Amino acid sequence: MDQDQPFSPRESANPSARQHIACFRKLSDGILASAALAAHDDRPEVAKAELARTLKRAAPALGIRRSAYQILDILLGLVRPEDFAAGKRPIVAISNDRLMQYTGASIKTVSRCLKSLVEVGILAYRDSPTGRRYVYRKHDGTPDEAYGLDFTPACFNLDAFAVLADEYRDALNRERNARRAVTRLSRAVIDLVEAAGPDFSDYATHAEKLLAELRHDPEACAEWLQALYDDVLGVVENRRQEKAQDASKEAEMSPAGGQNVPHIYNTNPPPSVFSRNKRTCSNEQEANLKADNGFAVEMALEKEPCGAGSETQHPNEQAETVEAGHAGASVGDRLTQSDVGNLEGVSIGLIQSACSLAQTETNARFKSWADLCAAVEDLRLLVGLSEAGYTQAVLRHGKHLPAACLAVVAEKALRDSRMIASPGGYFRAMIDRASDHKLNLKRSLFGLAHS
Image 1 (cartoon, rainbow, N blue to C red):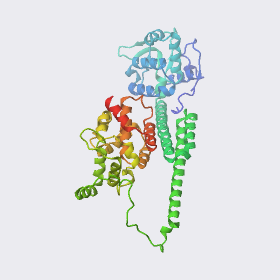
Image 2: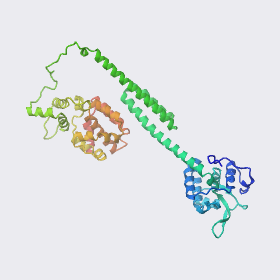
Image 3: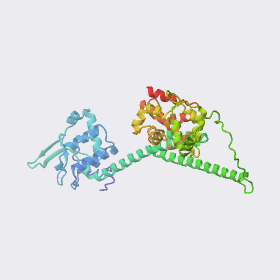
Image 4: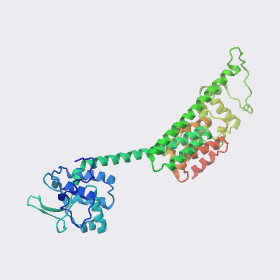
């Protein structure tokens, strides 16, 4: 027998295949195929545990659900393991009325479920002349006369059922991986479009259309989104290279790049706008400021702008201190004058008292700005913000303001998930408000600290 084709009728015209089927049953190809398998004496010897495990794995692929699956489980529990040995017949003698009592289904539902199990090649009808189901056994336990529901077709189709169960499991795994890929690629496309600028908004619209049209086919949707993401990535990379080439050409064409043009060095530094009302300091303080620029920035940010027992510092002097502390630092570490205004009134002590849940969740303590910046990666993963989105914020405002905003977003999301539907979008909105000088971070922190 071809094990890959378990459901095709076999010897359906053979009278021996129909002699154990009652005349009141309406015959079908599946019933005749199961009866033909049950009429063979060369039944393969299988173990009951392996048969039960394979049938339950293949049940979803065979369309066996709800009451039919419950009845199959009852029949597997009633059949004896020794009846699957060679020379015996695995028959279950249980009436439809008893199955109706066990399952709570109607008598018609029980009959319909048994017929479905027969047609898929699991059972075969072995009806007695009177229509009753019973098993008479000898003294050694072997069946002498048995009529009921025969598991012989399942023994023949066991290998085919195992292949069908593996294929069904692989299909479920592919669908699950495709759904994960759809979620990942859709977020990646949106983040890439937001980082690239409004010129790429059509790609985001296209991604939303793909999600709406192919929501019932996740594998095809994942393939289309992957192609769309590669297209956006290629266009963004080409534009970046074009801008770099244009910048290099302008540098080559500028007079400053000529070899015969003398360089004019201005030995007198221009007057600073922050030089007014500048306080004098000793040579020792100037030496310490030049020796540890990063520490000066930390101290400038950790110091409270106002409060009892603290010295009041003029805004111009504060901006000058931050500017001097970041001389020669990288772009991500610089703090512009606008960022000083956004962080006005914000201290690391205020952030520490306001963001208690964020510190507990990330297992960190915001005792200094360095500690807050070190916990940025955990906070970013906590709110679901992409690395590209946070890098863009650092390029615009340095590392301190985005870190403080990220801590506020994480704290609000942890306190009430319904407060912020999209933490990543909330963070980007805070960065945009900071660019427009409309961010009031101090008010948010005070509200969290006192709530």
